[in-house]
Image (cartoon, rainbow, N blue to C red; front, side, top):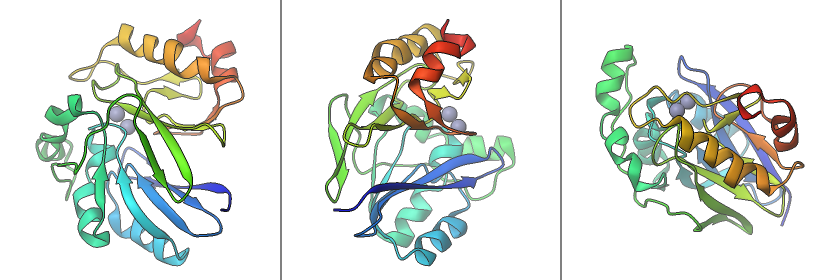
Length: 212
Ligand SMILES: [Zn+2]
Ligand SMILES: [Zn+2]
């Protein structure tokens, strides 16, 4: 097998980091959080000759899941995740789209919800599922132990944390998710998040103002 690689396509007016995780030799991969701008996602997949096996969703917000059903239709693959606690969010995406003036976002019905401790994979790249509620009740994080990498969605950002003022948000739960599930994985773990640049857990543990 080759190396795990990640490519980021900022999508929707929220500049959400739709992420393609792939193997640089086999070109197998998955799309994480196709919130919208599906044509741009498809163009990137084709230009790089990637073979997408599944769509993975971190949580049920429109900027992360709003394009998932359209992309599923284009690629004929299954939607995996988030945790079932986000079903109420996933089934209200079309309402959110109208409220935000976003065209084309559709309610999302995953083929399979995920639980804490499950493993999702493509090729030989395995990702442990961590249920990390707080920003959204069903938020999951995908952790690849071998590569020392995590996709944390909107749980943690470089220098910030996910907002908790949206339906289902819970600040205390979010801090617990970060401090009890993410940071113990180790300072050296690199992460990609849902918005803006990624980083390393150690830098967030030491200097993120929301975690002190
Ligand atoms: Zn979110
Ligand atoms: Zn987001």
